[in-house]
Length: 106
Ligand code: FES
Image (tube, rainbow, N blue to C red; front, top):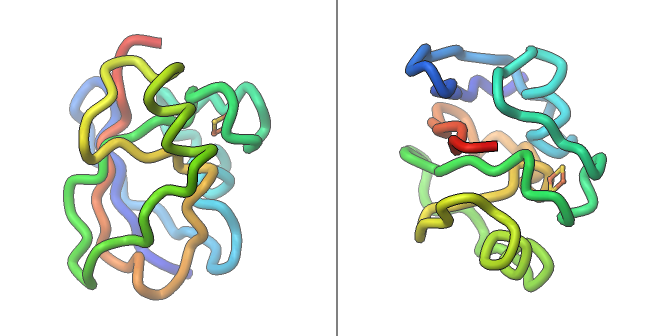
């Protein structure tokens, strides 16, 4: 398990145990993180798993691939430079201690 923190839309911080090898969205959904809807089931199409990466203590994450970047640009609410789709982030040990803020406005 990999400890990852989410800041929910109401500002509440929640640390979850993310499953290594899975998309981060799965663990966020299982933990009931408020605001992670994941309407498309992880296909990088809906942007309802959109979060902002605030802290990555073990170094930067791999850059988004084209599908993720396009969906963030065209479908995400309030995209920012640190926007990520949690369905496209594979959980690894390197994610330990990372902090994500759930994007607002969906
Ligand atoms: S679950 Fe739809 S884009 Fe991530």
